Length: 550
Image 1 (cartoon, one colour):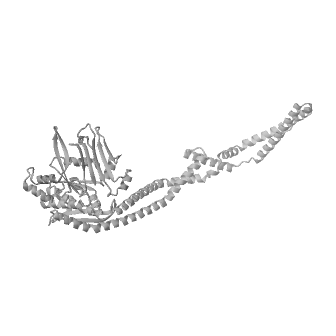
Image 2: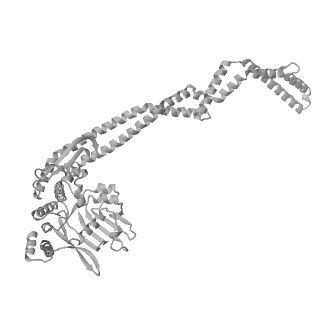
Image 3: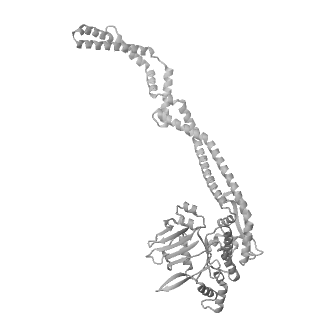
């Protein structure tokens, strides 16, 4: 409930500080006295966007602060979601600075307007002509029926499952899109992979292969030069080996004459041994040298394939080709396993869809059960409010579509008079009728759920006499379970309040100021008497006022 309201430097208000109690609070005042200013200030606390033109003195800060007792509202989780300190006495403050900048605070913590609106919707409901029109909207109509049907937990469950369902559907569509893209490349990737697998890349040493090719391709040249080398080494008398042997014999004859000669002899011997080994190696190479055109063609073909693959894939070594081959395998495997992934995701979607259908059915049944009760209560209250022939019909139709709050279409149909036909509320109910309907609905809601404090802004416009008395009774009954404010011009309603405030203007030093005063018992009698008979208060008006108050 709203326990206090402080307004400073706003419109025609210099400074105002007022406290409120539970029950029914009446606010009266002449037309133009500033009741709308009071509502405007309170609307800023509830998240309305600020306007510098609303500031009384543009050189000073404007402050609107409201204190709420939230002990009965079960808002701990909301405070946690908004990352705010929870306090049973919650203070909401708005400031408009001379610069035009606006700031908002909840329990002294700076917040965004979005956070302010999220919290304030649970604290106070300012009923205006605009909100009356909300009654004709689907969201509000569902809100009413679901409140009576106690569908809160079911709707939360449905909402959570629906979020999961949409997420799964999104993932499924992404998989299906991926499959479409991969299938386009699958055959080509398969061809490339087969081409790379056939060459057996892991067992290829490109350098060895190129060496084998060069050897086979130049076998005749190699043979000729091996033979020439062999002749130079082993030719009789003129061969290098014989010449070295001759040198060895010469050095042997003088080796005893000094260590230098002995060392040269040993070196010549080593050269001779090495040349013998070289000759043997040349013999072996010449003996093993073969001409193999088929092997040459095979190796040449393999090298051509490798070079073609290098060119095709824009790489320069075997390792890069192996990396490409592995990547292709991964793409192929992903494509081939995608059907299973899609199937698994489809099963998940179906499973959650089944849950949604089950929850939607529960929601539908609970709605259907409570609708006759709601219609009966509503028509009874409307009869008391001067609409004895008003008839209501609530059409509930199941659909195949998953909506945000179930699978139902809901429509409030209204018939004001006998002989007419049912039609949509917005087409068949006047503004005055809508005001009485919304009052009746809110009074029914108050029996089922904890409503926030409510402020009715001249909801009694266009009614008088016994009907206004009935409206006052309804608001009085509502105030037994919640805090109710009503701005009214009707004395019958004003007399039913637990507390009565008067909005009035005063002129001080050529400036007009709006003030709000809580009336005592005598002042209240005078105010109601004036509402009955005008500024000239008669004895009969005073007596009537006292009678109404009693």
